[in-house]
Image (cartoon, rainbow, N blue to C red):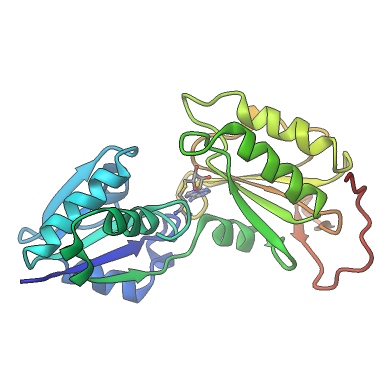
Length: 258
Ligand code: SAH
């Protein structure tokens, strides 16, 4: 008997930002897997079983879910935001690729969610209106040299950068090092935004510039957005501002270092 595994993005936090498809898939599941903090956001019925695990055990969690799915159960694995962005969907496919050949028979569905960068962008205005990239600052799963190479390339190519996983208890210095590196390429007035816990009760949005960006403003729930040379602020009468990146890119205005 071969069951079903649905990989579900729960969105950034607010229930209204969860898609109807995600809600339906959660309701249909017999078993729910995920990082316990994310599973806490899912109402559980008495007939559903919850398999919570630690944040770092993604591959083990994927294998456990696939093992149970193969017995015929209807399994859901949850991630925050979109499950394909620095999250469980890739772990599931890696587990399938390297695991039991029979797991390839399981019906796997990936349900998209609103990723933190889109939720944050919507709060700010339209910072992702032109070319952008997403980089995870975590060096748990890749060498720090890879992170710096990509950051530098992204800045030199003048992408808007959405930085995920900017900081954690074990990674204190990386965000400061990233800002230093970006300052070598971008001007001091480049907009930087710290968007923390977007769409949750404790949401906080802070605008600053690359010159003044203070890494201690970020925590594990922060998406850091760094503008391109075209990203600008539109001041509002209440002292706030919208941030947007125009649709049209003219000749490069940034300083390009080859
Ligand atoms: N799959 C998730 C990302 C997981 S990585 C997604 O698509 O959003 C975890 C990182 O996502 C955090 O360190 C933070 O940078 C970002 N993040 C997740 N939820 C967030 C939220 N509500 N507000 C701001 N950033 C968030």
